[in-house]
Amino acid sequence: MQTAIYMPNAMAFYKTNLAILPEELQLEISSIGNEQIQLTWHYKNAHNVKSFQIQRSNDGVNFTTIGSLSCMSDTNTINTYQFKDSSPINAINYYRLVLVDKDNISFANTDIQAIPLSKDLSISLFPNPVQDMLQVSGITELSNKYEVQIFDTNGYLLKVLPIQSSTGIYTNYIDVKDLASGVYFVKIWHANHNVQSAVFIKQ
Image 1 (tube, rainbow, N blue to C red):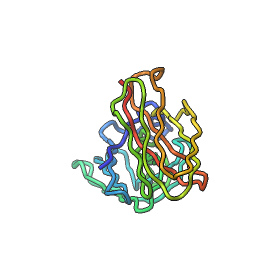
Image 2 (cartoon, rainbow, N blue to C red; image 1 turned 30 degrees about the vertical axis):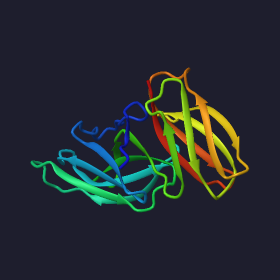
Image 3 (cartoon, rainbow, N blue to C red; image 1 turned 135 degrees about the vertical axis):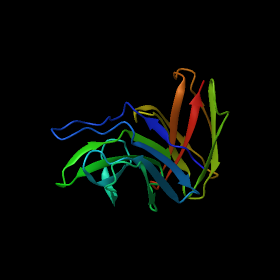
Image 4 (cartoon, helix red, strand yellow; image 1 turned 180 degrees about the horizontal axis):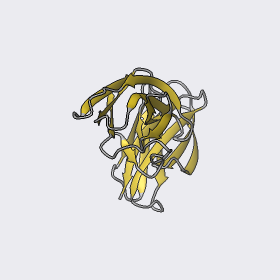
């Protein structure tokens, strides 16, 4: 099961003349196998919230609403909500919640969280955590041309490496000595636009 990467600096809640998002709302994300992603959050309705919009992005910037849930009106109890994304992107998925008030006005959103998903193709990273050279290996029957991209948790592209394999089996070593310690995403872009993704930790 994949665990989401919390991105508190990517996009914080915003203010209007209505209210701000209370700190007790925390979004939790986990993958269900390789096909679905489940979102869970807990909230006590102290801000006249009518509903939650669930939004997803493939770049952490441009979001689309993929569903909504009504908010319980109980202001004395912290209620638990769950939403299942049955059609996640076959790459890195970015999620956030948008709060909508009784007048159907969106007035606050949560921090962004990201989680990778690879539904069709296999990829492995070794060693992980890594200090200097990261081995990217896997097998595919869909194409023999690849581009390896490395992103930080804010979505910034740090490295691009083209790869070509005549056998359909690839193993590549990436020098990551120059990266600061932290969490990074690897994305493999195929010539047929299919995408593989994985996460590694730089020590």
